[in-house]
Image (cartoon, rainbow, N blue to C red; front, side, top):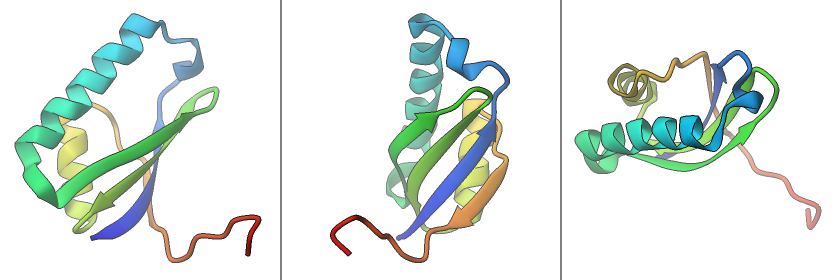
Length: 88
């Protein structure tokens, strides 16, 4: 599978309550279960008005399908070509 970064436009996401975030996670997990082993959520980072999510997926189409099923909008999708870290 390929590794992708997804930028989701979610106004005021940083101000969401724990319950609101839990609902979002549950919707995402339900969609992932429906889609099977061709997509996996790795982690997400929340900024003021966006989430930046790392997914493993067979292609961009299944990421878009996940967005439709979960009700979580998909903005930009970028395939991660390389990973750098402080160790080189």
